Length: 104
Picture 1: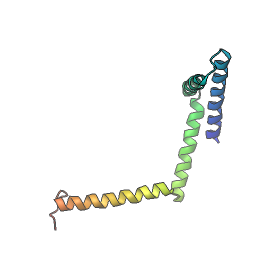
Picture 2: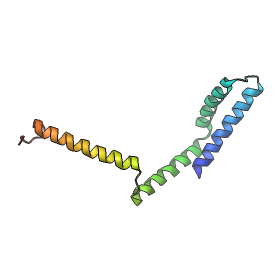
Picture 3: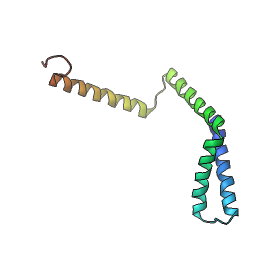
Picture 4: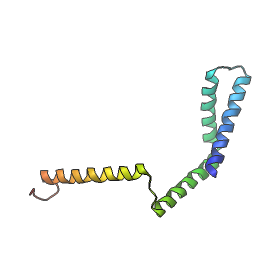
């Protein structure tokens, strides 16, 4: 699983930076914040290949779910909401005569 590997790399970078900052004397909560920022920057610059592999794996997984027809509750609910909004919008446009037809 590339996502797990990428996450472990990022956690390792955070641990290294936190250890270095602690070692040089920055022994407060600010060390964790600075270490997180440094790890983020370093992971963006150094972990391009694992990040791309994780993104590709997640995209393939999403395509597989779509192909099988698996939807989440949030996805189906959002789709239903969009259908209701589209129907209401269409009805309002017809009532106003904006869709090229005359109101009934």
